[in-house]
Length: 419
Image (tube, rainbow, N blue to C red; front, side, top):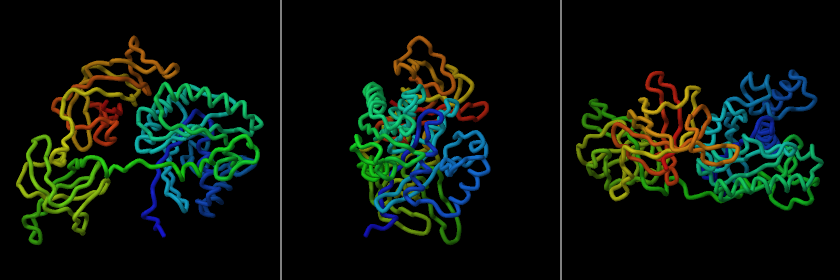
């Protein structure tokens, strides 16, 4: 029998417009799959009574901030963990309000799938398109369009089909590869965990069954090996007088003792002599393990360097093409110094040009209006003070992404994907 630790893990995020029922859906998933404790349920019942709800408000299972419960909206990214006999899950419940789009980017950045909720009464809205575009940018493997509140449209197949056809046009424009459609009522549980008798015209999977059976891509351990160095370990103690190792978290791939490696940016070569994990010594490490690696040669390695296998070197360049989501209330400023954080490396960079901005309503490229404000998505050209060692985002999410930081305030202002 497969043990809990050996079970497959699926990460998914919920998205959609305000009041589409994201938090209620997650609450229903947790409740109907019996993944909440009795004391949690009692706390939610008590909170529902205090808020004057006539029934248990399952959205309160994820709306953890007081401001969220008072306003009935999601502000922060709420992570929840649960498991069924078939698979483990990590859920990122993300906000629907446009001013919290940056939080949706955060939640979706590590996800395998996105559940995009659509209110059956309202159909496709601007935020539906925005979140779908972000899902396409972040190269999520699957998009599940959950057409919610079907109980409020009398479970009309016509309403469902109209939304399905409208979204199919968007999916084709965004080149979304795998899109699934499910009619649900998150409040009542129709087609969430249990099949609904009120949708006899729907013959597809329930949401939970779909989540349990989505094929998972080969993991990051199958990609070319990348080890961004975080820290050099030199105890210089009586017990370890000559110990020297380079600590970091494997961003991708596998690393074995005796592997021939290249150290970037110097492009010097060496051989792995030992791999340590806490108090254990390993013959092999796989992403995303955090390890300390010892090398045969006394080479210059420090934080920000990257260790890769010989023959699997990434791209190296100081001119990058990026798709960015702008996260700050101050607009993007051309030729202004920003701190570029890439893996464990930091370098000064300038955004030299805005090629275009994405019009979320039409999903077209706007080459005229190049002012990039908060929550805008744009294609830009970046120049860094020294070359970065990177992969394209489509090939590696970790080494293909970067963070843009205001050099004056040290605030994160943008998230970029290298294309």
